[in-house]
Length: 208
Image 1 (cartoon, rainbow, N blue to C red):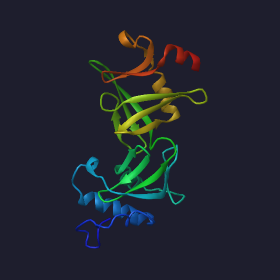
Image 2: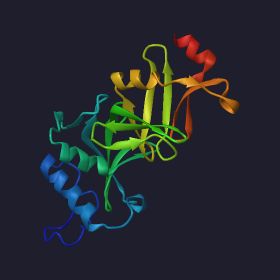
Image 3: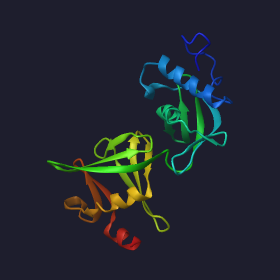
Image 4: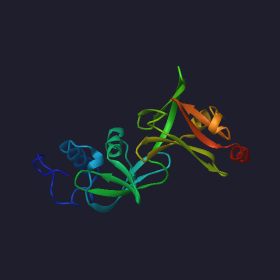
């Protein structure tokens, strides 16, 4: 998204991310992100349509129907990913494009539990090797479904979530406990001083 001199961002919207080969697309995202030093949340460029990029339910990224095999490239695109009211966008300072996400953009694949003074802290690793501490800054939520049972989602940042893999789901559900006080009618999981509700006693019994 920078001009040929690489010293300033092109002022022409919708010229760099649409219909680009994968390598050029990654270069333009990288250059634009490096030039703009301000907070990414302040970027408000025009919407330039959709590109053929898809994140499947297993967390794999595809471009023009081909898997993106380089982890560094996936992390680059993930760094400018944003969830808006009408879908997922790759956002740079001068333009944004829509992509398809089948479920959640990330997958949670591993967890570690640490005993702390005020209770346990659950650390979760995503498929992009980012460790997250469940607690005030990273929520845990569950979707209830009779077909798939409980589907745990971990908040990575803002409205971007990671779906727990099946093995991790089993580990998380082994930590479910009865709530107390105002949460007495709920089962949930505690981490870092927070109690994350899974379901009411009646809802959980219906799934078992």
